[in-house]
Length: 301
Image (cartoon, rainbow, N blue to C red):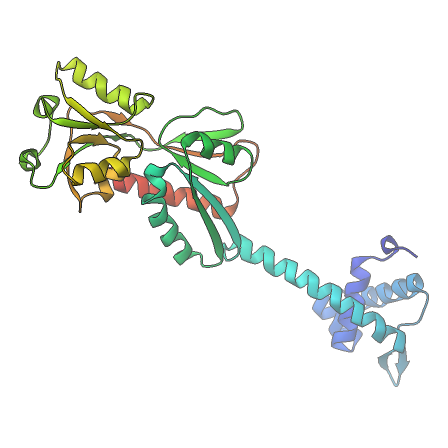
C-alpha cells in the first residue's frame, strides 16, 4: 500500500468517528449520510488491511490498531489546521512579511511614516525598509529581493512595473529668518545673486532647475553641491544658501527651514515599482495603496 492508496475523505471519516464516537454524529459533522461514512470506513479498512472498529452492543469501539493510526492522523491534521490557520492569517494580513526599498528622499521620512501606520493596522506583518539609490531599488525589486520600491526618478527595467504617482512640484527652501522667508512665493528673480545649493550635474533634478534659471536669465552663486535632499536641507538650515528640493523632503523640513512655493513650477515625479512578472501579495497591495494616499496628502499640503 502506498500513500496514494488512501483517500483524504476516508481519513476524514475515520477521524470523525474517532472523535464523535458514533457514525451518526460523524456523518453530521461531515455533512454526509451515515451510509456514506460506513462505506468510507469499510474502504479504509480494506486499504490498510486491518479492522478499525468493532461493534459492541450497538456501539463502535476502536481497535488497538485504530488508536495507533489515529495518533498519526491527528499529527497530520494538526499540520493541516496550522496551514489553514496560516492561510487565514495571510488573507487577513495578520501574518507575513514585506520588504520595502526606497530612494533616500522617501526612505528617511515618508516611508517610515507609512510603515508605522501600516504595522499598527496589521501587527502580524513584518516589514523591512532599505534605503538605496533609485537604480539599486529597481534592481532589488526586479530580482525579488524586495516586494515594492518607491523612487524619485524614472528607471526603466523590463522586470518591473513603474507607476507614476500624483504630480508634484519642487519647493524652494531658505533659512528661517532669511529676507525671502517673508514672501508667500518665490520666483527665479528673487534668488538672483543668492548662494545656491545644487544637486550634482548628473542628476535630472539639477538639469530641470538650471533650465528654469537660464530661461529667466537669472544667475545664482552656485557654492555647494550635495547628493541628498536631506543634506541640502541641513546646509540651508545652517545658512549655507537657498535651494530647490523635492516636495517630500520639503514637507518634513518645515521645522528647520522656511519652505516656499516656487513659480514657475518645476515638476518632480515619484514612482512606485513592483515586480512585472507576479501579482502583488495582499499585504503588498494594501501597502501600495497606503503609499499612494500618503504621497498625495503630503504633496498637496
